[in-house]
Length: 239
Image (cartoon, rainbow, N blue to C red; front, side, top):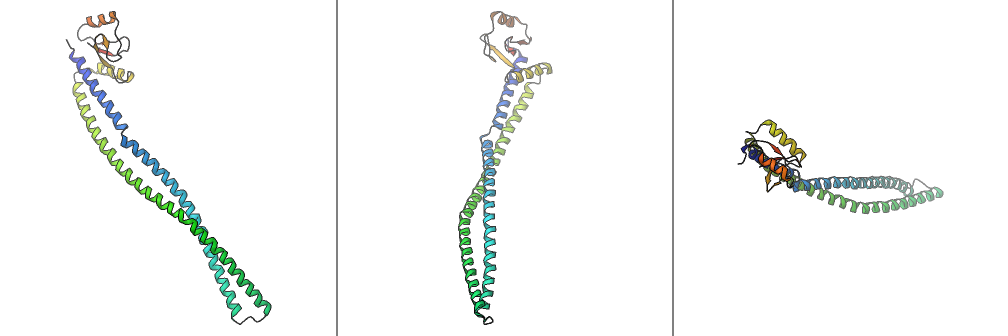
């Protein structure tokens, strides 16, 4: 005849196993893994953006330096041209020197303008890369928000199931002594979550080993209400 106490303990274990499965499901949500992957990608995108931003900043600084130098040379050239053509200088040697200075300033300006053009051309792909990274970063942000919402929804759903299992377990364990529950929980921690097992066909359904004839006979002869343990695995046996 079935022992109501041990049948209740089996019911407790059934709820505990469901709880284990639900907790595992909660921790291993596919969306949670995807969120971690997206978060990692966001971090990589930020690193790339920082590197590209540094390159763009260096190019901008170099461009400003050249532009300032071109402006300074332009002012010097204008001043020299005013003196050259203003009529205030009459000495041929001084006029020749001013003419050479104007030409030198013009050559230097053209060289700087060529450098400036090269810098501007070099800045274009950097700006395009930064824009592409910013766009990708925005996409990743949106995906991270979406996944976080999904994870929150899945967690809430599982938490509801966990609460229902906890309530059912509490009801099933109401008539079981605290000593027996403590023994069962200790066994569960040590034996892969299974602390109590039914004896079927002379086998322990926890470890799936057949009981020796002598042990099986002793189990069957034990008085009703006796807590019997499998000698091999240590689990509580339900006859």
